[in-house]
Length: 324
Image 1: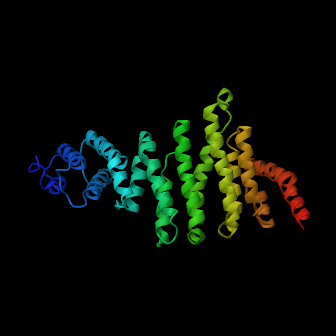
Image 2: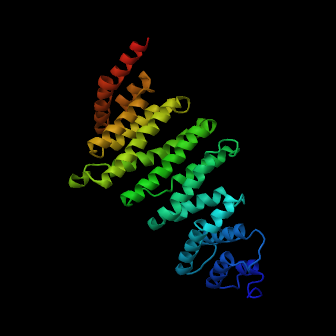
Image 3: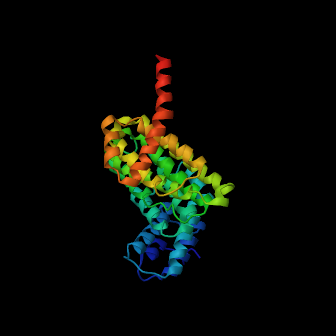
């Protein structure tokens, strides 16, 4: 048997080997102790991701059945007890950042892959981001992560899957704003583009729908709205990176708000969050918003700013006066 599987790496790379046979060889190589291959786990992971990259970039062709088999094989590898045991023992298995970006973008083309691949890949990138600027020495790597986050699906998902995807993106953004402050000075627009996807999606999912406004599904969306409020607070605390963009953020918010009627519980959290951004706005920002927005959006802003002035700003000024 060992003789049959000798030179397996060459057979996996050979264009003469049928793809169905390559998959069988790769599966055997992963589980068998008879396959002696230097750095076997890394080699097989690289082979699988390279094959998937080739298919999605249209550099190689194979049947849909093989494509499905490759994704299943990758799932088996990443979730195998063997791999986790090796990692606990200190063995390093690397997944290049551009490959992680590819996996997010590719798996996002199929909603059924969101939980098994897209979310875990984003979570892995977040773990790397949390290592801070000591690990991500090149600021471009953070931009690569932000580019990948743009591809995470947030539409046409069941509430549990939506919440998982939403949380994964939120945690990645939180890791960037917390662990990469220097990058944020230049990457704020890209960061806000990803955050706006979260905001726009929760406004769509959190709109009033009658009988479906309560229950477990509603709770999932409510949790996501709390994360939006939380992120607004973190953005406001990092005023150096976002002060010049505060009016832009408010404009984005009221533009999306004008399209829907939100559930009161969700609107409460989003409103409290945007109040933190209004705290950053200067007088000229308010004048710009009052004059520059389109008629319908301007009315929404005027209502928002009126409630902000009456409730939030007055309360904050009272607290400041009490503190003094």
